[in-house]
Image (tube, rainbow over all chains, first blue to last red; front, side):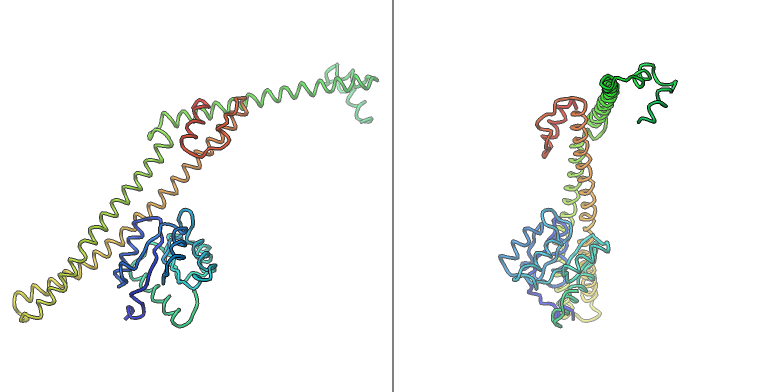
Length: 140
Length: 214
């Protein structure tokens, strides 16, 4: 049922400085029915923003704590750039303090998942993000 | 001053020369003597400060030597390397586990499909049908288990982030120690090596420490 709500041919960028975590997120996305070859990876915000500028993506799944450019700075950079500002951003992070969640919400994050998480949580958040976008809503 | 001076001049606890000075009508002589007393006191203070700086320098030197020789792991660089090793080993272990899950998943999926196909051609109570139904259940269980196995590897990310934080902490302790060495070295009168101004690599840090006798 939920798979119909999500476009399986979405181009997804997974951003995390830990290669293990990038692989776990990729596995979960494939498990949810997304196409493996359409998932790409970046190891920090700086590389992510360069990739986002050079090719189209439909979704960004990003960690918070990363060297060079953090996830929150990546989110702000995306929202500040005319060609990228509407891009859905899902934050997946071990940071679970109130202030950081508020900061992410204020910067315009579409969803926030606290690690460790399960496939069920990822599925729920992704579905919610694209349902809201389909309904013409904005970031939550 | 006018009211205080006669009162002070009468004070029996004051040194004689000071009492005499206070009573002296010669202003220039009074100023000179006062300057001499202040200078003498300043010298005492600077000597005490110098001693303090040398003691501090020695204490920091001992601390550095202890860190370099007595402990295990041998020194700060070793300790940080051990943490890096742990990070790498745990990442490799997690990747190997995910390799395994990724290798097994298509096999489980194939078993589900093949067993379901076999069920179509079997009578309900045939042994092959029983085996096919068991195979479907087993393959489904495997797929779920493998997916959970992959997600469970996020322990590497969570522990790895903590290891990185400890590594950064050791790095900041090290640079604080180096700054302390630099300051106490300067205070104790050692010539400040040019390299002490800014330390940006382990090599520079080691060189600086060796210049201060660590």
